[in-house]
Image (cartoon, rainbow, N blue to C red; front, top):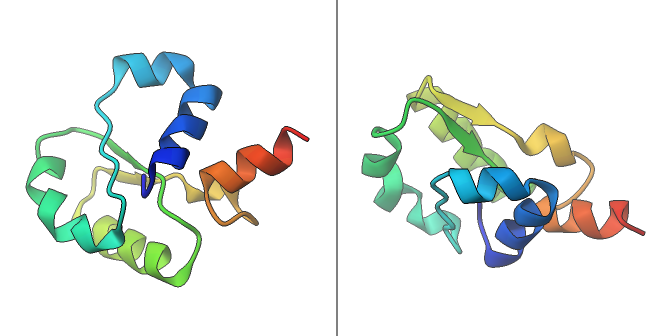
Length: 91
C-alpha cells in the first residue's frame, strides 16, 4: 500500500486480513527498492498500489521480478487508489 489512508480503507474492507497479515505501507513509491529484501521473505504478496503512472510502473517492476506478487489494483480499477474506491463505493 502506498499510504496510511489506503491501509485504513483496507482495514474497513478486510478487517480479518488486517489482523492476520503482515502489512507494509510505503508512503511513497520511492521506497520500493528499500523493501525488496522483505518481499523475498513471503510466499505471497498482495500489492495495492495507486492506479497512477508511478504505481503502475512500480507494479510492473515488482510483478516482473517476483513471481509471488499479486497485483490487486484491478479490485479498485477506475479509482485512484483503494481509499478513493472506498469513498465512492460507500456513498
